[in-house]
Structures are given as structure tokens and as C-alpha cells.
Length: 491
Image 1 (spheres, rainbow, N blue to C red):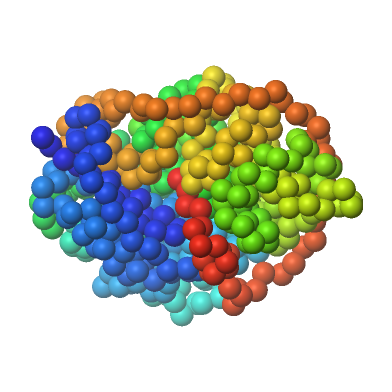
Image 2: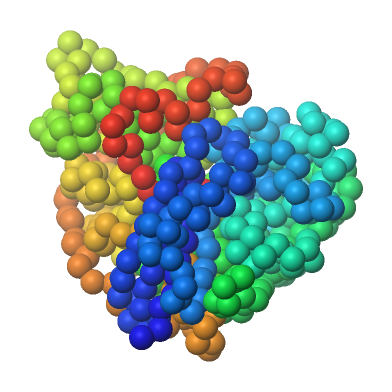
């Protein structure tokens, strides 16, 4: 039996799965936590990876390894390969002003969409480089190379043999803001626009390629971003739309053609198979459930029971859950808001229902945006830590307007990384087929009034300046909730 390993280095934790290369059967797994916050020393990821590998029984008998990780994180290295400063993560929105400046200086939203498939927002690496240039010029001057979390971990697994050994894949590169999925090439002019000068970037490897071997002799896969790895782990095909409720919420689909949405709602990413992955991301997803559970002083199971006991529409109560600003729509300084309070709906059940419906309404808007970009919806897959909520699974069809298929809970990012490792080991034009069994389908009549009410209220929010010294949402969730929800996608 040949074994492969997949890594998911997410916002909150590192997970490692070891699977059979031929069938995909799970053999063992392990995990270790990451520190809280929206900026992290990458050394913490490496330490967590080592602990997760140990918990999974080690990699001595593993033939190949793939790494999936949170997208967009800015990892800056100096000439000696040392980390210049803690990495700014995807959910750090301090670069919102830099994003607006870059969009303007780069010719506007349409020009950016045509250049790199996406309009930069605070999540994107390119905006974080501009923030670094403007706010920490001494650190910016030390930058010799820029890479992403999965690039850095793959490089470390291979022995970190010089900056020239840095490698990435087209999926994760497509989230930087300076690589074009349509042309398959970097845009060094856009990197210079952000940082003010050139810097080394990882070589972009093709699907199924390998940047080398681990220090233990296992074949390294190119790795990819978490959403791309999740699509690979789920076996997503054209016609499938994945709705992932993790730390962030994402709605994405595999497509045969690149997308370029000048509104900036749809990010025109590449996938991990040579195709494309149009994606809509919201910053607020499973943590909305965490926050609602904390407000009500209950656990997630009880929150679900309360939500299902309330009527559709939560008695007129609407939660607009911009609890950490928002990426889609692009409102980094927005705050959450609760509308329609009346004596009759000021109940735990209605608040729980409004939290679930508000979360889903944001994702439904994302689904509409993909359809507007020409994505066909033949099947909706509901995944992520939040999808463990029975209320979410049962209410989703009514809000999304489609039946949803809920695969069994699994580490789909790590699974996709393991499948990519098996591909790098075996070669060939497509990854090995792994069967996805145990999917349950949920159906419900659509309730248009829920989305209509949400649409009328989603712009009625208050803007607030972000305090970068305040406790991060991760810290707050960890302090308040005994079992914070972990998810598939965190881009």
C-alpha cells in the first residue's frame, strides 16, 4: 500500500491526513492549534505542522506530501530567507485604504479585473505589500522575496534550500493580485506598484508537478490554496457549486474559462487542476454562529435547536452579520446590525434563526453573483465546520433556492492536498479518482421574503474604524465558545 499525506494549514489549526494513494481511504490523522490573531509569525505554522505530523503518526512511511493553506497571507523573506515580520493574514483588513489606492492607481476596477481576474480588496496579498511599504518602510526595504503560507511551508518541508527553491501553484498564485489566471503569468508591474520595487516570487508549477522532495525523501506536491484544495478533495466538477461555511464563507465553482468581474464581487481565481475557480468570499461565516451562541449563552447544538424552533424569517428579525467588517460587499469597516426588533421576536429562538438566515443570505448573494458570471448550477455542495449545524443544513435550501448536498464532515482541504500528492506521485493529466461517499441531500421550499428583507437592510450599517490592537475575532471566539466552529475554507 502506498500512502500520501495532505496538510491543511488553516487560520485556526493545522490538520494532517494520511490516505491510501490509490483509493483515498483515510489511514490516520492529527491536528494542532494555531495562535489567535490576524498576523502570525510563520514559525508558529511550522511548529503546529510538526505537532500535527507527530499526532498523525509521522511521515516516515509516506511517499508524497501536499500542503493546502489559507490564501493571501503575506510572508516576506529577506535575502537570507528569514521572515521579515509576522505574516498578515487574509482576514487582516488594515490594508483597506491601500486596496483603494491601488485600484485607483492601477486604472480602476475593470483594469484590475482584466489584468489579474480580480479587483483587489484588503484580503489580497498585493494590498498588504502596499500597506507594508507605506507603514513599515524599513521592513519593506528588507524584503527580498514574497510568498504565501502554503509556499513557505512547502519550502520548509523541502529544506528551505534558498529563495530560488520557492514554488507555488496557479491556484494560490491567483489570489495574490499580481498573477494572471488568464495568461498564466506574473504581473511584476503590479507587484512594483504595491511594494515600490521588484521582489522574488515563487515559480508557478503546473498541476501534478513537483518542486522536489521533503528532507525525508517524500515527493512534494506543488500545494495550493485552501479553496482550491477543498475543490480537489470534494472532486468538484463543472456544474457543481460549493458553499463552504468556515471561518470565512465561500461560494465557488470549477469552470473551464477564466472570469473577470469588474464589480469585484467574484474573484477570478484559478483552480488546482488547470481550470478556473470563480469565487465569492464573505469574511463572516461560522463565527456568526459562534457569536450568536455566545450572546445566548448556549452551545452550538442548542443554538441549532433554537433556530429550527423559530419560524422562517425569524418573526421579522434580520441580522446583517458584518461582525468583522466585510469583504463581499467590500465594507472593511462595517459593523453588524440587527433590524426589525419587536416585543414578539425578542426571543432566543428568533435571534438564533436570524443568525443562521443572515449568514446564509450573504452566501446566497454570492451564489447569484456566480450565476451572473455564467456559472451553471447543477448541484450545490454544503461543506465546512458550519455545515455541521443541523439548522444550517435544513434552512440552507430555503434561503439558497436550491437543494443542498451535504457530504460527511471531513478535512476536505487536507484531503485535496493529499489527492494532489497522489497526483504528483503517479503523474498523468488528471488526479486519481477518489470516491466521495455518504452525501445527504436536504430540500425545502424557497422563502423569498427572507432574502428580500435582508436585501432591504444589508446597507443599513454603521462604519467604524478598525482598531488593530483590539482582540481579534479568533481570540474573542476562543474566549467565549468552548468549541469554536472550524471550517473548510478561510480565504
